[in-house]
Image 1 (cartoon, helix red, strand yellow):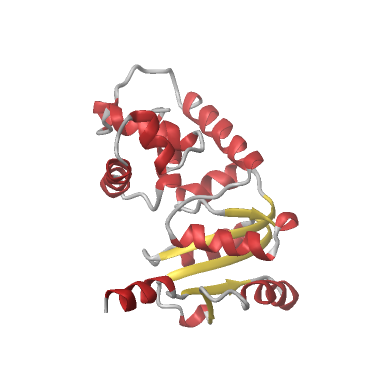
Image 2 (cartoon, helix red, strand yellow):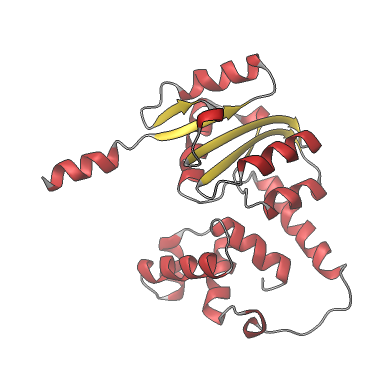
Length: 219
């Protein structure tokens, strides 16, 4: 009986709804994802909120923003963005909505798209390196452009020192195991810290927590 329970978890199918600007783009994504046994394609109009929504857009314009805002209303819906390009102000809007899994259209392959869906479903983030650098720079300019710098501590905003340490290492690209080794904690402790932060500040995932920490000047 225990073995059967493990099989159920292993074969869980992730419902994925595709939102594409044209039939050709949709057909291409369908051809990539349909062979994946862990993914089941569903009608976006019938998606109940669970699963992953995959939004394809050439540029992140007002139409894409409106569509994205509608998709993230479901608390259990994760979003993967596939874009041709995006400007810094729009990138901040995307992150503020809790979306931290983005692919460039020019880099999409079947395996890359599959991994992005799995990553989003787990609540993790996946940004292209150049886009992550742009986000960090944009966050820094946004922070210092708001007014005179003021001294602050983590306690002022509710973050504890070890929470800041963990988020800083997440921002450096470390996974849970690497952070545990670096800080001499167990992996369970690291996971609990991240869960506590995302829950307390109502953040969607660890990448969203990093974006929050950057925006508020913790890291």
